[in-house]
Every structure is written in structure tokens, then in C-alpha cells.
Length: 325
Image 1 (cartoon, one colour):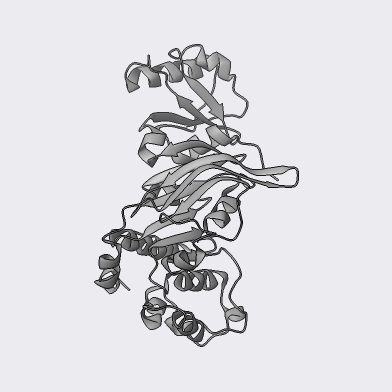
Image 2: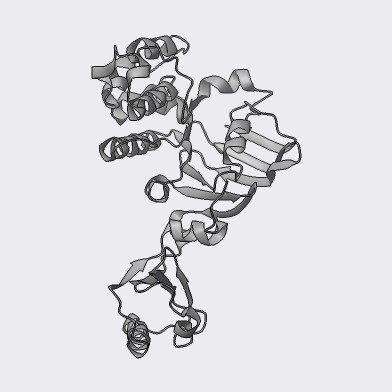
């Protein structure tokens, strides 16, 4: 199913959509003594892909469930396509598609029958056969869901979220469990949907997925927004030097020969990332300084290269590197 299959009805329907896909102000939600969301404010633009990133327990799922109308906030305001997801649920529901990471589809259901059933609940559904074909599920149309692979079940969940031709899609880990071919096909489909005006809000732990798909990224930690912007603005287009050497180098000693404001970190062991400060000169001078320090301290480097700062680097800087339980 290509972009043309969503014309002309979807495009004409979305032509008048000008309000943000999601607008959250001062959102708070507690579970007993635990504050899952703590004064969160963020915005997901219309006709854009917005990626919500955060460690486990950061509040992403609770935030999305409130936007979907499954939970009520304790404080703050939430508007989805300009509507209150609780008070205006009946009006909002036909406009929103929801893909859960797991569950929701009966194990005995068969993909073709299930999508036809889902289509019957919508006034202007997409063609179930076209969706099955676009997501590579035609050959498994008569196979019980319990016998599908994890990736096939994931793609069926995506098809179910799309069957009503939504204006806004919520996708929870849309490519979890998919092989590289299926993951890239899913990325292409999300890009097609955005191209015809569908707004997408997705959660993912794959930083390359967020960098590739998202127009804007929101990083959440401990229920609060810690950073937001385009992937390019968050990474800053900054170049980093990366090298591999023996673990446990004296980073303070290395920094002493680098420009003021430089930073160095080791993760995982033996892998080092060096961010040059604003006072750094050209790349050749920086490489010479590092190479000279390594030579003076008899440090053998297996790899020394210049690379762009990634969204994963930003994410770890903001949320920390320790494991979350």
C-alpha cells in the first residue's frame, strides 16, 4: 500500500487539520507514592513524526496512555487533535490509531479475518487486503495469530492501527522484534503516512530509528521533559573523536593537553569519545594533540576517527548510563 492508496479521501480530510497533534501542559500522574509524570509539557506537531524517548520508567507509556484516553491525568491539560481525550473520547476515537507493542489480538484470530472485523468498525476503512500486502502478511492471512512470529504479530498490530485511516497514529516500539528488511519497510511506510499528512507519535528505544524518522524528538526522564527539538538541533552537528585503546586511561591527563572545555568519556570499556571545546582549532591539531599524548604515555590506539555526535550520545548524556530497573 503506497501513499497513493491514502488519496484522495485522507488528504482532503487532513487538509483542514491545523491544530497540534498533541499538546500537553503541566501534566502530572501519580501511582501511590510514585510520580510517573511530573509537570510534563510538550507538543507534537501536525503532519510530523514525533519520537518520545526515555529510559524505562521515565513516564513515556503513562503519557501516551493519557493521550489515548486510557488514563486520567491528576493535573495538567492534554489536547489531542484539539480535543480532550477523556471528555471528547467519542469524537476523537475515529481519528486516532493505536499500535501497542504487545497484546490485544486474540491468539486464535487469523490476520485476514481480524482486519476485516476491525475494518467493519470504521466508516471509511483502508482495504484490509492492501494492508496485508503492504506489510508482507498476505501469505499468513489464514494463520492463527499464535503461530505467527513476533515480527509478524508486530506488523499485524501496525495494520490494525492503520485500518481506520487515522489522522494521528500512536506507535509503541513499532519495529521491536522485526528483522532488518521488515524494519526498513516499516520505516518507509511511516514516511509515506507522514507524506500524506498523518501525524505520528512513536516511542522507541532505537536511537537510529528516531534519528531517521522523527521531525522532532522529546526526551523524557523521571516524568519531566529534559530536551526537545529536531534530531539535528539536539546533536548540534558536532564532530567527535572516537578511539579504542586499553581500558582505564587517565582521562584527566588526556584532557590537560586538549582545548579548554573538552570532554572525554569511556563507555564501554576501552572505547573513548572526545568532544572538543569551543576553543578547539582544526581537526588536524586536535588529532595531533591526542596522538602525541598517546605516544608519550605508550597508549596503543586500535582506532582513531572523526564521527558525528549521535542522538544516542545526547540521550546518554541527559539520562545517564546506569541501568534502570
